[in-house]
Amino acid sequence: MSEQTSGQTSESLTVGRTAALVGVSVKTLHHWDAIGLVLPSGRTPAGYRVYSGEDVARLHRVLVYRELGLPLTEIGRILDDPATPVRHHLRRQRSELLDRISRLQEMVGAVDSMLEASRTGMRLTIQEQAELFGDDWQPGWVEEAEERWGDTAQWAQYAERAAGMTPQDWQRVAASTEALEADLAAAGRAGVAPGSDPANALAERHRAQLSTYFDCTHSMHVCIGRRFVDEPGYSDHYDGLAPGLTGWLRDVIFANAEAHGVTPESAVWE
Image (cartoon, rainbow, N blue to C red; front, side, top):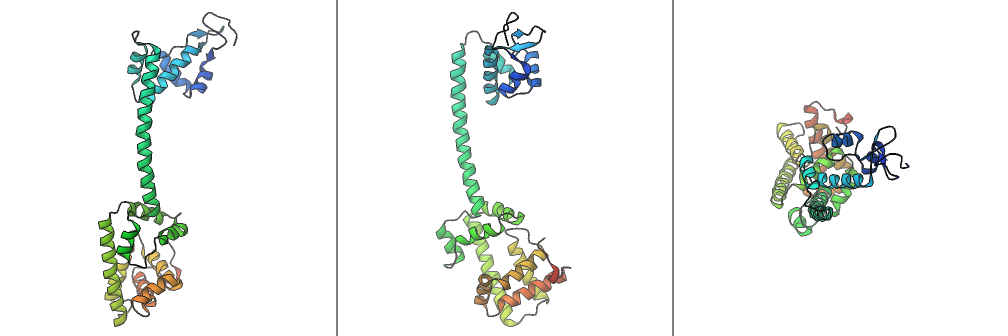
């Protein structure tokens, strides 16, 4: 843009170009003009206001102070203080920005720690995990579970809940699980019939234990019961508690789900 009117130079920018340059809306520039915060100092031959290089520099200072949370009236007072040179404003802005960067870096560190806890679902050391869950506990099981179910709503629910659990919470969960499995093994050895009141009560305790980690419906419980039988890792665990316990537990889960209106043969993960 050539120099055609007083106050307009080759560096002058229209409102639209200035808005695009500094990253605000044209409406914002009009508002700042109306309140006297940043006034375009030149005009085009057609009478349109244009911004000089100094105007744009002031806009950038306004943006920095606004980013720091200062109200526009305070920003205007600071910038228009005749006793304070521009370099003082810049030094103040730099100092405040460095302080903010430091605070943000601390926040990023805290969020990273929370993300790691949420990713693994554990706030326990490897040693604490082994002490709570037994010597055969493998920390890698959590990563394997994440690979299999990490994109599900239930895994997100588990990760959120587990990340907020303390070692004392995990101790209570481990003790509750141990007591439940002892009762399951005793009932299985005693031949408690699936569908009976005692068996249904045990099924509900088992479902409630799973619901510690995610909301487990009766239909989901059936899907898990199928997996117990189909996957060696689960069947080895339960049959190690009592011979044939895996198949018995599946039948108990199926009968209890059916009593709650779920058809085991057609149950799906929902």
